[in-house]
Length: 345
Image (cartoon, rainbow, N blue to C red; front, top):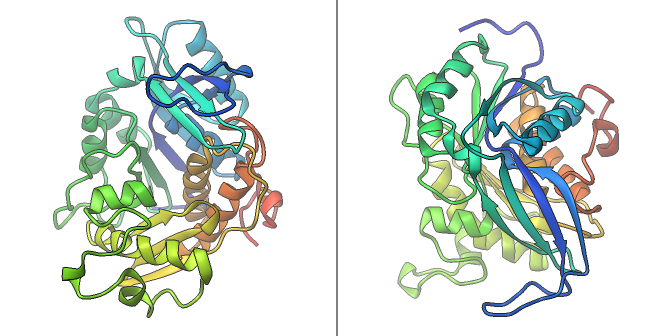
């Protein structure tokens, strides 16, 4: 493992999509036809979104991904290059189209998303292994994975990363099989998920539902000792998510549970802490979780502690919802009160 010589890099392993964004008066119910009020095209994919967000926060960022040999793929690569992302490890598949996402957004900013994986589904574990091995990763670097690429890509990442090497963040969205607990020499993942995903992964009650009476305690009573900061509705959301945060943290090197406007929970070293988010006027929540992950990775690569990095990420996620599209409001350090170009206060 190469010794670090300065702030680390962010290496995102994930998807690249072209987004078709549809503005709807309401999200359609099953069997319902809804007339779209406006439409637009943008760029997305969790891997690409997270890479662009990390680069905007000042981190040297490289993307490991696959696109199709089509106009969408060429446009997506040009967009990534323009955003300052190193695309040297983005492969082109001549037999599959570039991934697509259909994003339906209602007037409140809530969304539903359909994804056509395309070339993303053809990224292989061997290709990920080769890309990561070529980078001479250091302990200062952060590798960021997500669930929109095949499971073998996540497994390949786990096989490459060793204890004492680069930090690993796994954004467990869409919900899928979590990386196995690492062996003695392996590096565990810091798991990032929203409250619904976290409950599904941990097998805990869904947000807003109390624990089963057989547990002998309510959600508030179980975690009062670690959730003394938030109040009111925020406190309820934090307490609801705390059991899942604790369970997921035990599977790797901690967990971060995003709570939307209520901020996030950070579970590490046997404790759960609440991180608030600043108030924001919500225009579109699409991609806010990806901005959160990219900012989290960038701050960790810059040497921040996990609680400090999560606080920046919560602020970045709040900033991201203030404009339409997955990348309509990408914060830079100065937008969050950090020194420009460094990500530091």
